[in-house]
Amino acid sequence: MKTRGARKCKHCRLLFLPDYRNRDRQEYCNKPECRRVHKKESQRLWLAKPENRDHFKGPENVDRVRNWRQLHPGYWRKDRCALQDDCTTQAVDKERVTSPETPLQDDCLANNPLIIGLIAHFSGALQDDIAILINSLQVRGQMILGKGPGIETKKEAVYAAGEAGVVG
Image (cartoon, rainbow, N blue to C red):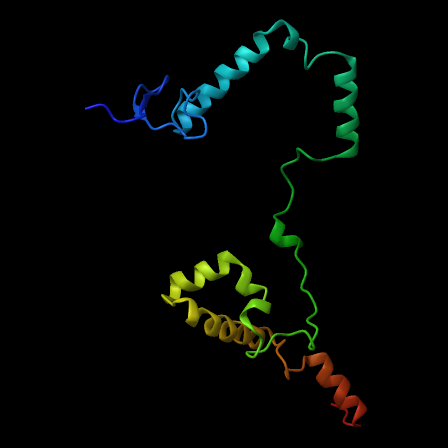
C-alpha cells in the first residue's frame, strides 16, 4: 500500500513525507547527510550558470572583503572568550524588585515560555500553580543574591552604620 504523499529521497532512497509548503519541489529528506548533499548540488548548479560564474570574483568583491575585514579585526580568531565571561552583574533597584504580590501578567518571567516550560517540567505544576512558583522562586533567588526587598547589601550596612555613628 502506497503512503499518501510520500516520496523517495534522491540521496538515501528512503521514503519521506515532504513539507506541505514545498511538497511539489522537495526532492531530499531532512536527514543531515541528505541536506548536505542537496546544498552541495544546488550550489554546483547555481555556479554552473553563465551569469553566476564570476559572481565572487573581481576587484569590487576583493575591496568589499578587505573593507569588511578592516572593520571587523580578529573576527576569525579562535581565542575569543565565552559570552558568560563578559557578563557583568546588574544593580537591582529596590523599588522595582518584584514581590509575591506582583500580578502574573506584569512579571517578565511569567511571559517567558522557556521559564514557564522549565517550571512546569521540573515541578509538574499546572498553570494556576506556576504563578505561585514563579513568585516564590524569584523571592528565593533575590534572597540568595542578597538583593531582595528589605535586604541591605554590605555597602549599605556599612554606610548606614557610619551615618549612625557606629564605626566598625
